[in-house]
Amino acid sequence: MVYFARNPLGYKNLLTWSQADRIYIRTIELTKTLHPIKDSRLIDQMVSSARSGKRNIEEGFKRATTAEYIKFLGFAIASLAELRGDYEECERLRQFPPTDCTELLTLLRGEDVMLGRQIMSLERKMDADGTRPAGEKWQAVRRRENDYNKFITDSIRASGCVRLPNGQVVKKEDVKPGEEKG
Image (cartoon, rainbow, N blue to C red):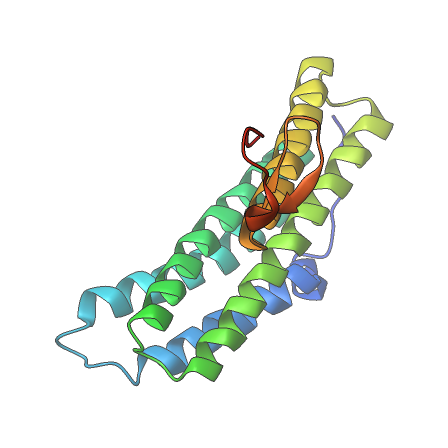
């Protein structure tokens, strides 16, 4: 394999890194409003998760192979998912003003989408280069399909609807007696 030198600070040009940096800075600002002793564990966890999301993007960018880069972007997604869970809990417990939680949750959801698209772009690059094993390619297709189906199912449920065995989507209250829910 030939290694092509790239800009060592090129990750700073990535939208995913810029947004992760913004999330990290806002998390530090917001956690400063919490009680430093009573909430010390929460503060530490939130700041660490935000930092890890940003740093994994940087570390992945520096890796020698695209497959390693993808793996580190996956680590970033996982760290930011943990942070999103903390913000959802803080929102539920009203530890931050609602507008701040809404802002951060929106940023985190957007970051999740952008990182997913970045991974898909890198996978397409590997496919074009012929560097991704066929089995791994098939697994990625199945994973995306399962993620899509879960998203659809969750969206249907969140909107107060159900999917019938025939595939039709109806409001829960419109389900007729004898019709089984899907």
